[in-house]
Length: 211
Image: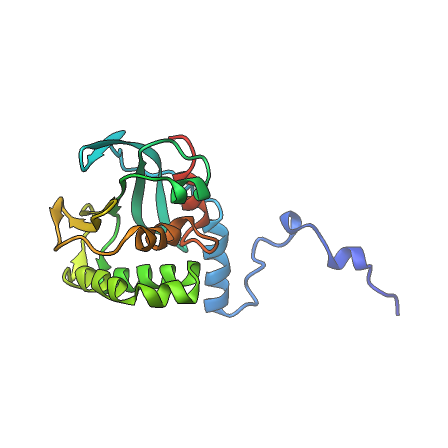
């Protein structure tokens, strides 16, 4: 009995049976399909963010904007405002002065889930001792998010950092409580999207690319 060529077993994926998922379990096939689709999604934000904003009397410029995806689903659009242009994540994090992160919800999201996702992102991108140091501020941030049962599509929220005062959270343009944390805490917040394990790699690139 002849042997089958190894080359046949390693055929180019582009030439395989288009029903190549037919022998897989439905959940696994669905996951594979979702990952293939998400690979082609663009991180470019559909929201027309303003090119400039002012925080504590300091003019800021939109450094970059993009869309946060969860597999194939759009969660929110995000824009980052800085005092001076930053072409790398490290430069954006290290930059002095006020900063602003603006968001527009693209689907219905639980406020508590969003807050917990932010906390997870901070923990994933910060040293353990720094995370422990700012546990009180992180808990306050989650409490602010939890005060909103759901973010509805089209609703806006934002984080504004002012040196010497801290970070203020806004929903639909209204401040939610007093500023919290210091510069180090806001750096933790920025690392959710700009750190070594960002929430979305394509969004990270979009935030430090020309808009």
